[in-house]
Each structure stands twice: as structure tokens, then as C-alpha cells.
Amino acid sequence: MSAMIPRTLPGDAHAQAPQQVPRTGVIRSLDALLRQARARGADDAELRSNCDDAPDFPLRVPLALLDQIENWTADDPVLRQVLPSPREHDAVPGYTTDPVGEAQHQDGALLRKYTGRALLVTTQACDVHCRYCFRRSFDYGNAQEAGNYDAAFASIAADPSIHELILSGGDPLTLSLRRLRNIVEAAEAIAHLETLRIHTRSAIVNPARVTEGLASLLANTRLQVICVVHANTAQELGPAAQASLQKLRASNAMLLNQAVLLAGVNDTAEAQIALSKQLLACGVLPYYLHQLDPVAGAAHFEVPDARGRVMLESVRASLPGYLVPKLVRELPGASAKTPL
Image (cartoon, rainbow, N blue to C red; front, top):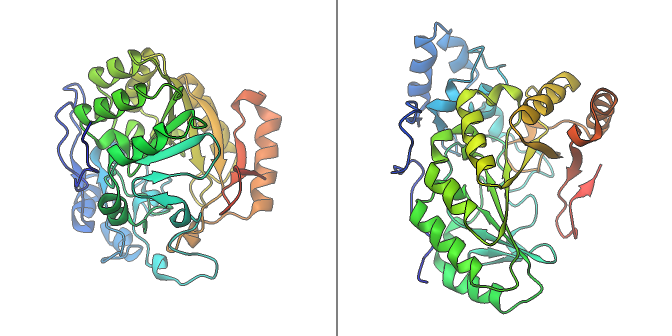
């Protein structure tokens, strides 16, 4: 197989978008976002006063996610995640461009951090630019120029201890179905690979990415498929996202959710309980609640560990154990996620 790391830019068209989801456009500028706000009767002057007009990390928001905004102010839990803040320019000790130490584990497109697993950086493209993204400063150029899929799969094939392939990015679901099929077929050809894990936020924020063709691909692989989606609030799980998750469930994939604990977004027991209940209704189990990775530009989202523990105890007192995510932090060099 010859499949170089794709040089796609965020926002490239996706030919497989289902017709029943009309909102497939994307917002790429603050002015366009403010026009959307004005169209909904919001005070765009208030929003602009809370925004950075020229962020280092470009603004990108799918229209499908904008449809989930309930209160068009800077305090809305969905809007807060994508609205560039002037505070992103604050220099905060401990907040770096490589917050989880990935550079030391990177070999072209492949990341080897944990025993038995290998992570393939499939693309730099994402459907949404979350302001807290731990890879907002990741060296995708290194991944694209130093490696390709062939080299990555040759490395995996040479190491029988690897039993799980993780697809990440960017977001692997921004790839075309053809590219995804090439990846799956290459993984299937390696006998010691047993599990294919796909990490995606696209299934939540741009549900049109989940097509019948993708569901069929996942349903017909010999590999055990785990889809780890990324929803931070129940508000994000509207009808379109629910439909995309239903398609993934129909493929017999196991569905788990990873959320990030974010100040002003989901840092209350009530928000976490609502998220867990809505995930269950969608057939998804809460998996991890990540403490914020200390990436430069995201310090204003930080929630102290002690507060996170107290909050999760309240969640645990209200829900059965299978609906309580594990509060964890990723530490550079650690052999696994660190429970908090």
C-alpha cells in the first residue's frame, strides 16, 4: 500500500456527507461567526469584546456544532470551547507547546507511548478547532515529511507486541472513505493486530462525516473496533450527533467517550451527570474525564485537581459506576494515564 500522510487542509470537502444533514458548512473567521450570532439575535458586540480578532490558532467551527449553541454569549458551554480568547496569549508557567511529551515518542507518522499500542497520526485536519486542543502546536510537518503510512505499518508489522492500532490526528474521520479503507486493510494484513481504535470528535461536531459507507467498513473488518468519541457536554449531543452515533453502533463498534474537564464548560456535577445520561441514551459509555493538558494558550480552561475530585464524588453519589468516567491526567513519560 502506498498512502502518504495526506496534505489536506482543514475544511476539504468530504464526498460522503449524507443528504439528511443539511448543515455541513464551516465557519473560519470571527466575522462569519459574528454574522451567525447576529442572525440569532445575539449581541455581537459583547461577543467581539470577549474575542481575539487574530488568534495564533485559527478559528474553525462546523455549522452543525453552532446549531447546538443555546445562549449566544461567551459563557455558552459550546461557544466557549471554540471562541478565541485574548487570554490565549497569556504566558503561563508550565503551559508548553508539547504538553504531554509527544515529540520524544514520534517517528514520522507513528507515536509509540504505551506498551502494546501504536498511534498513527493520520492527518492534520480537524472539523473543529477546540481552543484547548493539546495538539494545537503539534509538528504535523514532521509527521508528513518524515514518515508515511507504509513506513508506519512496516514498523508495526516488525513488532509483534503491538496488538492495538490507534487512529488519531487531527481527526481520522476527515479522511476520505478510500483512505480509511486503505488504513483498515493495511492493519488487517498484520496478524498480531487485534484492535482498531478510532479517536474522533467529528462524529459529534460534524455528524455528516459518519456515513453508511464508513459504518459498513467498520462492520466488515476482522479487527475489534472501538470508537472513542469526544463530547464535553450533553448540549453537544443533539439529534444529528445522536444519528451519527447510532450508525457507529450499528457497525458493532464499541463506543466510549473521552471528555476534557474545562472551566466554564462542564466543571459542575450537574453538567457531568447530564453528559453521562445523554451518552447512555446514545449508546456510549463514559470512559475518561481528562484533566486539561497544559498546552500554551489554554490555561484559562484549567480546573484545580481538588475541585475535580470533589465534583466527581458528587457524580459518583448520583449515578451507577458505569456512568462515572475516570478522572485522569496524562503525564509525559508515564506508562499510562494517571488516575486522580
